[in-house]
Image 1 (tube, helix red, strand yellow):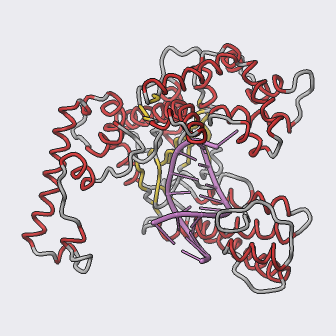
Image 2 (image 1 turned 30 degrees about the horizontal axis):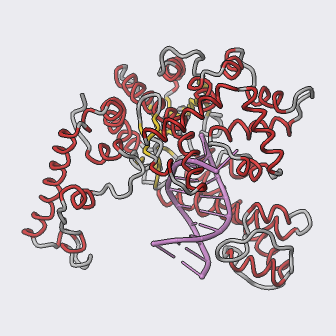
Image 3 (image 1 turned 30 degrees about the vertical axis):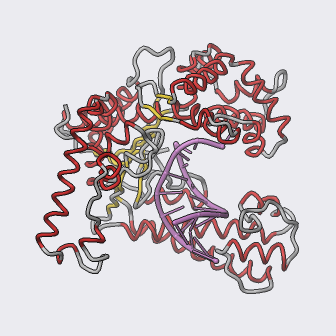
Length: 486
DNA sequence: GCATGATGC
DNA sequence: AGCATCATGC
């Protein structure tokens, strides 16, 4: 039993995706009670809270306590406090997340600054080239101005449009890049600018005196049960090659001779699709440790030796199924026509028949009950599943298909985090769990504990789900930085 | 405050 | 195409 309750998490678990879980909104909705606003007590933020007169500050604060208790009582009454996923996962996880946030992640400031200098050079030189190619000064960071320069001044062939004008997305510019170097240069300029502002300057700004960065995990925002991470978002640090990949080389151990260890669930969402659908072909591939994208490629392109491109297409189809595939989406993703996209999807279903059955059942079930759920019982309500508008209906279908898979993954890694935190504590280990990136856990490890961690973490993570036809697989790598732990 | 476009799984 | 956050422009 947790020693605490959280009304925000209770509301979230009842119905994730609902906007407005703040106390004042809940008080208004549940009790038709209008709480004193922060603006009211501080006279529209003219006063600092410590300057607010004690009497009104006391009433304002007491209201929070009172309403929180009111909501808690309602939760007890309606049975929310008994929801299994709340007690078994969300509430115990709170303490784990708190400790990860406080522990922080060690980042080498000088490494990051060095990358910043490289980027600065690239950005400066690209800017000069682009301005020269354009024949006039303009703000490359403004999509509006980029559109005007490319399509009006230079007269390049126009592609897609957005609500506000010409689209100048990476897709569109990529099409133009072979014929017009300026297009590629703008793509590169954006890429390096993004790295500089978000991952170099943004990260440096958030480093504390010990070179630690303390993210904030939010466990009540996603519709599927995933965590999110802000200030900084440690869940979208670049992992690609080139300069972008170097950002991760700044993520290093805080310990003398320490290492960074990363444990990630291999192909977890496709494995979950196999387990949840019970499809023999999909399960068989994992049982025999066959490359699943290659296997799908053999189904889609029978009789030929599979090329890299065919495997790439198959990989997109495999992921597409998890995202609730549509011919439209797949064709756009691969840059192929709808007809071919549909053929690929049909081939997939022909060869993994129980996947189709499972997906059909998921939607039918949702239409009847109004919600979908994960293997562990986490729910997402989807009222639009019965909408008469086909665009809205299709979107709901995709959400219904994706949530049980993405959400089960989220449940599994959350349980693993609770168990690993317990294991570290029970054995008084000094190594720290420092990050979660959806299917990956990252640890800051002292050298003496490397082997026991590697062994135990793998065992814990692979055995979260019992009685399944194929095992979950965890890969563990380590090195002097997060980049090397891959 | 919304739109766009970048990053991740 | 499912789920996110951040920087920037307007």
